[in-house]
Image (cartoon, rainbow over all chains, first blue to last red; front, side, top):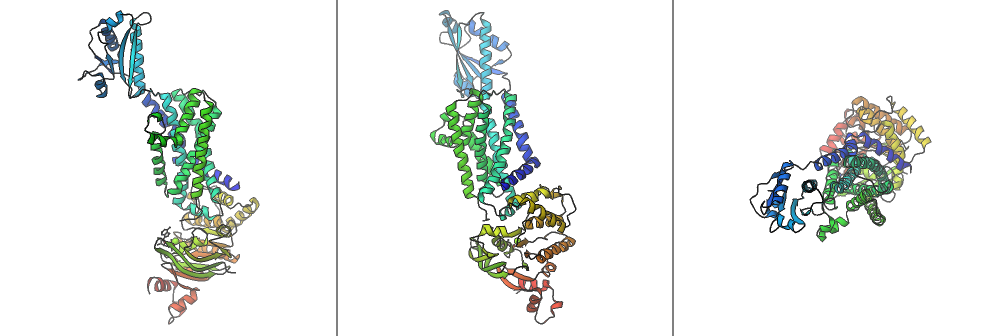
Length: 358
Length: 246
Ligand SMILES: Nc1ncnc2c1ncn2[C@@H]1O[C@H](COP(=O)(O)OP(=O)(O)OP(=O)(O)O)[C@@H](O)[C@H]1O
Ligand SMILES: [Mg+2]
């Protein structure tokens, strides 16, 4: 107990005194989330609109004219008559496909359907395009428009939105910060030589492991309100579920990542190596977490990796708790899995940890 | 009972013997000098004796405890000031000593007593709230010594404690070593300075992991140069003759 308390005070002082660690803890989350926010909020302008099938109808001509007059759209210069090719070759952002026989004719039968293809590689832009179009069509008719759109969103059919991505960025930050903080604190001691003095004292491996876990779990947790706060303020992320469940989820996740940081530091000898180890771990785990690419769409080999990836479960927890209000079964399940992973990571590091030099 | 007893000790890193078939013993209360060129195996031997490195062959015991089977108990009895950094640069003197006492689970009463006594011994004048990195090198080494003997060990291992320190501070440091020996502590010290070696009770000379001579400074001089008066011979000559020559 005495030893643990000694460790907590020491690690807090050293971390908070180190400008690099202060930046990592307090500045990095704000900057990263802000950059992410700016990148997402770029307004859709100069949308290249093309028409396949000709502007033979008056209705179609009207829609096209209004769209260009709105200032959002510009005519696309296309080389192909295939709407898919136009989008694939990046000649157009949106393509109207005239129904066979013309729009006027199909409107004459009561309601008409106009197919609109949108490139959704950039989600926000695609959503903007759809909104502009609806408003243009609505302005054409006084009442409920007899015209409906058959919108085909290409390349991102699930329409992942900013709100969907923010929890991913949040958990990525938590992951990066805690892993680097923990592993670099240990490798720094190895590099400087203080580690040798530390294990020259009669301390058991579990005392050192605990002494290097608890302070960083606490420091990592102190970072959670900042990250959640910035996400809510910048992106209007809601918090529909319980704050306590959110904190509990964050706690098991942080235990997990601190455990991984410990593990990295049982392999790495220098701070540089542990930093590399941290990033080497982070990149694939972000890609395989369902943050951007849905896990369900992955080939099974990759899916296996996303199921053993703590990030997957934490992102799901954040999305569920913040956006949906929390589904009890999912929360219990994910928290249990994360706890098991945390236990595993810390136990493995503990078994690998030696109080002798090699 | 000897303070340190080493018998046929070897330490191997791969094919390379850092220490080879080493045997010697150190008596209680002795100031034992451990000399040798760079890479002779001094630090490696000390690490074994502090329970930090497992020997590949042979036995070593410290204060009657075997370093292989009783490493944890050995660590309680010894103080160690390593060749590298022993203090945290970014913590204050007070914070460093607090952490040492927490690591060693010292009683608050004993810690206060020891700290007061030792800081007085090194005549520490600056504020305890000064960051270690802001201390002059000589003082830093003295504070390291305080941290190493804070728990009042029976034996201290000092690995090149005066490397890179000014002559005045080296002299002061050896006064402190003398003080520790006077208290009955065993001091096991490595150095590259011959004037310091002169102040040891006995000296072990190491070469490529092997012990090549072990005696008092006087006897070493006599044995190395039998045809010269011991007063005329310096340890420097002995060292050059034994370690770098022959
Ligand atoms: N962990 C290790 N792995 C491999 N070789 C090692 C290891 N530790 C030490 N050595 C080698 O063992 C030899 C003895 O090293 P040691 O540090 O004991 O020498 P030393 O006498 O303390 O030298 P110095 O005066 O430079 O401090 C050196 O050649 C060193 O390279
Ligand atoms: Mg050495």
